[in-house]
Length: 212
Image 1 (tube, rainbow, N blue to C red):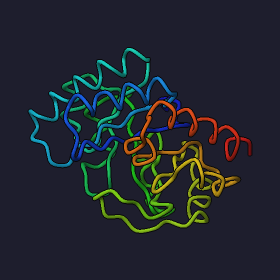
Image 2 (cartoon, rainbow, N blue to C red):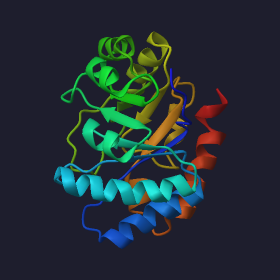
Image 3 (cartoon, rainbow, N blue to C red):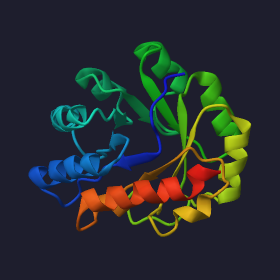
Image 4 (cartoon, rainbow, N blue to C red):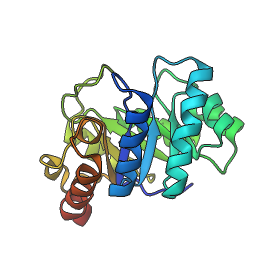
């Protein structure tokens, strides 16, 4: 299993932002303490995705923060990212593992215990579970109860990351859930000061469920 620090996981959202602003947010978030960045671009062409991924990776490399690419295995390989995160409709985890080899990180989304066990068996290194709370992003997802998160964490040996509507004020609801980290989008991307927001979230993670 490939090991990465999943405690504060930033999933990006470039909607409505110029490139300089977008890259600036990522840099400030890394400075503030995010431990992993997932670049998520649903609407870009392959060429556009590779271009922005190179620019984001230049930033994350400066902070020694691993970069994960959402959905696109080809983009992850093209830019030398640490790995890829795959949803239930993306290329199967087992196929991605065959292509990427043992040294790259593969994350998988799971909403049920069966999906989680299947992803682990196929070679996933970690699971993203949610949405724990309603989100404002355009990605449509059903709510996943904290109880299901806990069931998934107990059913697998790989780390589990909670995602969906999480912020410094509600992370405490994950206390004792078995989660290994928190993934956020809006709490950092839409904050007035991404560096401060990341630092506050990192502290909230350490003060709450990471103490289980």
